[in-house]
Length: 120
Image (cartoon, rainbow, N blue to C red; front, side, top):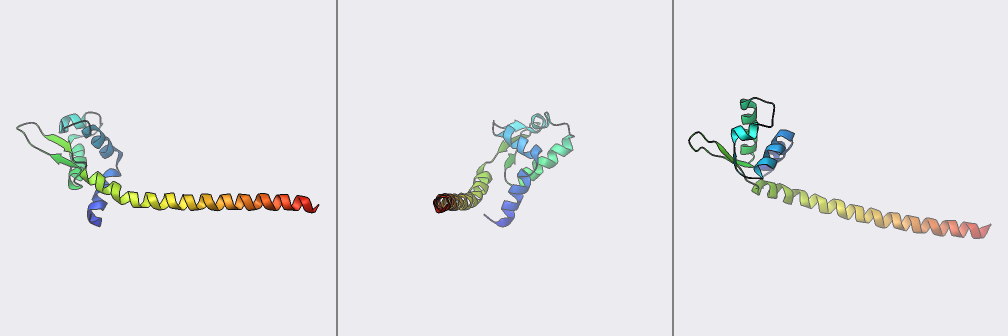
C-alpha cells in the first residue's frame, strides 16, 4: 500500500459522517438519497462525502437509470487494519515489558521493606 493511498483512507475515516455512511453501506448497497436521509445536510454536501469515500476506494458508486447505488468496498479497510496491526503488536510488547518491570520493582520493593523491618 502506498502512503498516499493510506492517507486517503485515514482522511476519509476521520469524519464521523463518512464513518456513518460506511456503517450503513456495510448493511448493503443503497442509493445516494437513502444515504442522505439521516443527515441534516444538503444533497451536494452528502455527494462531497461520497466523493471522498470513493477517492479513498472505500465505496463504489454506480448508475442504473435514476438509481445511484453505492456499495462498500472493504478491501482498503483491510489494508489499513494490516498497517495498524504492526503498531498494535508494538504497543502490546511495550506493555508486556512494562508489566514485567513493574512486577520486578514491586518484588524488589517488598524485599526492601521486609529487610528494613528486620534491621530494627
